[in-house]
Image (cartoon, rainbow, N blue to C red; front, side, top):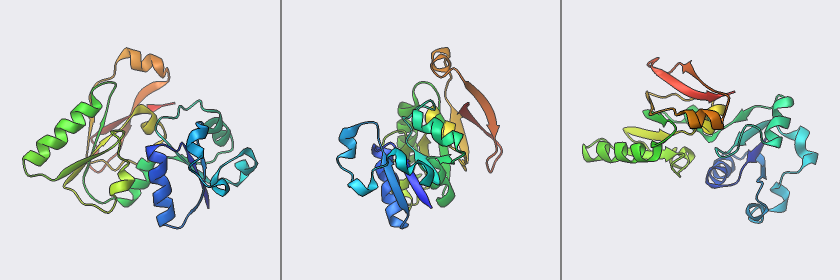
Length: 196
């Protein structure tokens, strides 16, 4: 199986580390050519490899209307996120947090509150640390900050608790195809923000 890491920022580099650990074959694409200078030539994606990609792992900052996203969707190539990989491999308790505003502040304060009260916790996700970086660590709770773009492609969440802080009209307007859909978790309590 050949993967495409689509976006080579913090998340993309974490995905690369994970794929290296499991010995997977992959290529990398980033719209910023300066990011690709850090990648060996044999790992850089170009259009001639389009038909050889079996699965895309997308970074959270890429919009659903990105030209490569559209091409892979047309070819029915699965598009996943680091959150999917994490959810398939992590067995601890997870709290997911999304919303238009205040996610980072809420996540930071929640983790601080839990730790002060003797509940070992850590934050990851859109807050700047890919959850793939802490797969081997165990916490009583991992708190994931989840952006709307991450949730658009995420198929597996496995959350124990989900928090939707707010959804403001300006956010809905900026991604005009936003809606809420019930998403089953172990406790059947969760809604996730999806884009279509």
